[in-house]
Length: 82
Image 1 (cartoon, one colour):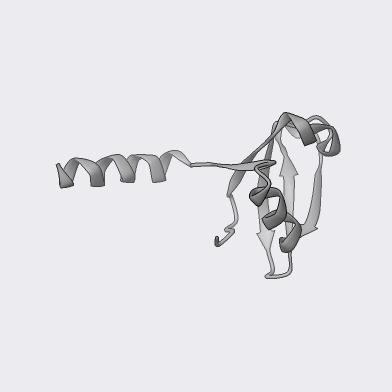
Image 2 (cartoon, helix red, strand yellow):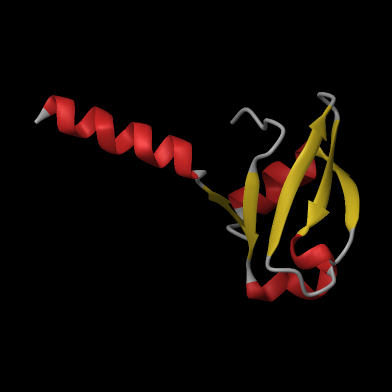
């Protein structure tokens, strides 16, 4: 999965305590080795290696929150198919 700036993730309740009880995380930058992020509701910021982010995604501790633009384009594509 390609992690781009602005990608938003929901943090599962099981690990929210590690992220200042924030419910979401938004990627600010990705340099190929680490990502920098901000936490939802202004609860802080941080960075982590991409390998750790991949681990959290694989364990379902983080889940991708699709942005509205991608949802709209997906719905539009499905309408064209049908």
